[in-house]
Image (cartoon, rainbow, N blue to C red):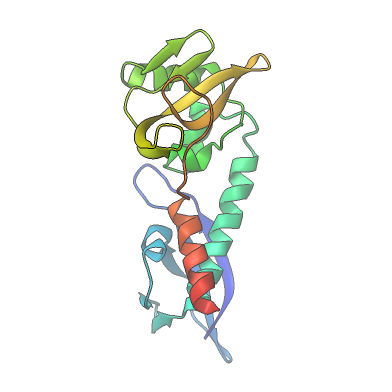
Length: 193
């Protein structure tokens, strides 16, 4: 069984990110089967999808091919937003802000205001805003302890930029984890050898 065609469907308010897949068996081509990306990100074994006339057992290579395709399509969408905006985040179909906006990218005032107003900020200066709820706890090599991190926005070269998740009052990104999609692809690449 091989994949002959794929179509990407970005996430929407009421539906998850997904890929339509057309499978080929020799001369037989089955209609498109829709595979939810979030489900594949959690797979380590096998995954079955029901087609119009068959039930497919996806191989590690099939899952990897689908996830790489989704990642490439997602990157095309994100590249269309050189300045990250709240509207762009909604339109992109990427639910997690950390996957929509990477550290160093420019953001507009409305996006900064959104994070400023969700909860009272942890840090609020004219050139530095940190969202009020801790994002994660990361190890601080200077203190030898774990500390809370916060989504951080700072004015750099006259424009707002997303700095990542930083310790209170700082702008150095401390996040060590990758997106679910990136982690799934790396795990499958390792499994595929």
